[in-house]
Amino acid sequence: MTDDPRVAAADEDEGGGRIGIFPTWRAVYITVLIYTAALTVALYAMSRLLDHSSG
Amino acid sequence: MTGLDWTVFAVYFSGVIGFAYYQSRKNVGVEGFFLANRRLGWGAIGLSVMATQASAITYIGTTGQAFDDGMEFVQVYLGLPIAMVILCILFVPYFFRSKVFTAYEFLEQRFDGRTRALTSALFLVSRGLASGLALYAPAIVLSVIMGWDETITILIMGIITVAYTMMGGITAVIWTDVIQMLMMFVGIGVALVALFGALPAEVGVTDVAFIGGISEMWNSIDFSLDPTNTYTIWSGIIGGLFLALAYFGTDQTQVQRYLTARSMRQSRLSLIFNAFLKVPMQVFILSIGVLLYVFYHFERPPLVFNPAEVAQVQTSERGEEFGALEARHAEAHDARRTATLELLDARHTARDAEPIRARIAAYDAELSGLRTEARDLITDVRGASSNDVNYVFPSYLINYVPAGILGLLIAVIFAAAMSSLDSALTALSSATVIDFYGRYFRPDEDDEHYLRVSRVTTLAWGVFAVGGALYAGRLGSLIEAVNQIGSLFYGSLLGVFLLAFLVRRANGRGAFYGLIGGMLTVAAVSALTDVSWLWYNVIGSAVVLAVGLALRDGPASGTAEPATG
Image (cartoon, rainbow over all chains, first blue to last red; front, side):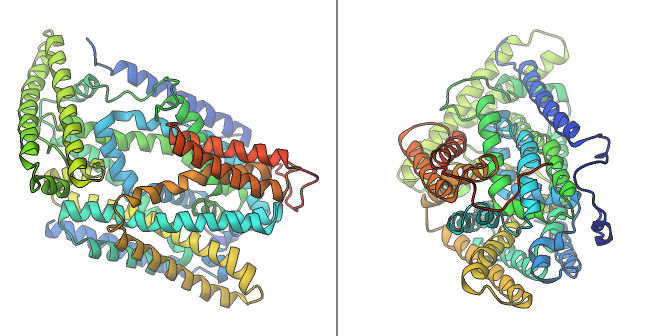
């Protein structure tokens, strides 16, 4: 979260370099898609498990 | 509010203004005022993106909606993480490399001046009108619930926001958004803890889950294929995807945020941050509404949460009718409370709870029906629709939350309103100065001149927003119509950008007429069918792309380079 302008000199754009724990941007994007699918499954599981509308 | 609440409130506002002043010293020139000299990191931008989207009505209205309908609204957000990935791959590289100040400036590079002018003008109209409503909506709720003067509430929020936005530009806006978003996180956590604490001692987490489950309040996913059904997994993932693409990819209030990044990597990370956090945040906000629903099994809620509407119907000739509904509501609530306590006892002593569960389900249905009857009655009396979802959470705050925490949570509602307004002001100002004033009226002035004009236009839009908020009360049901205007052309705006990015041979003629065709089609669909509004953006985009493809007649006229990232 730094806003030090000196860091701006470094070109940290596309191309090489890790993105945190991810090796590439492609890995980041795939992780987001898997995460979204997992969230959807978790919400569906919650819906089923906590549905007490019928005995 | 007690002295402690006012102290919390005052400390919050002093902190925001002081921090905005401190941060504003780093701005240099127009690029500093509108884009923070393109030097910010992903964390601040990501929180600002989140704060800009989370308006006060998102915060208090969503909890009220969950109180009535449960968690199903969360499906709207399921397309958002996918939209963030598409924005990172497709939108960010184009915006970033073209070094634009506004999203619409890019359209002149790619298409022509009239497409830029039309899209920017559409943004100014819709966002300008919406900014007044963003102030008015929480102010009217707070004035009704807290007894505060509506005009003073609007003026306090408006003047403070305009002052720090004029003073510090986007830098002050983003860093105050960071504080305000962190306040909202704290507020969500405090509200959940306070609600759990307010439940009877014998009610545990599994009991809360069970009671909410009797009326399907936790049901979050609906596989229905009916397009008139607003919230389904399909409208959420497809319609929500297009809604998020349109909002985060074409609305200057959001695009301006990630243009402040010091690199494309930081810009993308700010969006990925939202991809991960937005859905869980909405789950927590909606959970507050479901917890309120469970809480009101033990405390008797008002039949209708908006006291102004209740007072109006009580003094009308149908006051007795409303009184009879209130009596039936109280009777049904007391019976449900007794049954709920019996249910807890049965669950805790391993007895058969099924007959009691069925009784509670019947009371739930009766209470829900009485609320619908009461709102229909109010609608008849007022001659305008009645909807009290925005009053459910504030009503709980004022009646049940302890001193100190009340001040914090009311400050959070202010924070949510102000963090949306400040972003709207900088975005409106940037579109006015960059897309119109500097482009058509005074193209050859120096940076100092544009900076002065930028501050003046920020002030002017602030006055417009405050004036609109003060006048909004006289508009009545027109407010809803004004609020819906944006949904008619958001999808078409998205279509123009998709045309720019995806169709190499698309031209300005196709973009311009596609935009007009898309808006007319969505207006017709809205007027003539019951198709859910979540599909409007899909329809608008599709029409623009179809017209753009049909009218393509040669190589693109612009200079923007395709993305490679």
